[in-house]
Image (cartoon, rainbow, N blue to C red; front, top):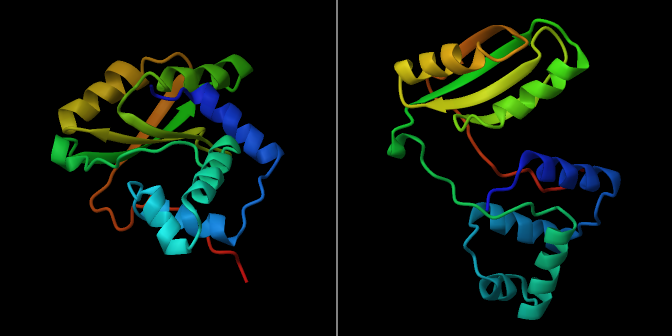
Length: 175
């Protein structure tokens, strides 16, 4: 079952309030899982010379503490016909509390929006969007985004080439 934005936000707030203790072995386990999420507990136990139950206990703690949020498969967007990757800047007409709160709730319902960030500065929201083609992009912009209450302007940049795209966080400690 997909995780909702509110449950993810609540979990992130918990992690921010009480930062879990993550030791060097945890960091190595997290790195291994980011590199290959299908790595078995048995393989991790062999690689790091820890018992199977010890690995299970660590992973369960990391999940409960919100360090590991979920397990997922990364799908090649172009292989399934989502050829355009875009960034859409959204400027709201006004900054009343209701408008600022409602926009992310409405965006949550748009499957084309992969990520949504609330920003400081001239732009209110930055969206990372995938669509099949220019027609699909046009429908998303004009039939959905621009019709949302409170939206004043959108500015779209189409990605010509992905130079770096990763989901792996840097887990080494700064020196």
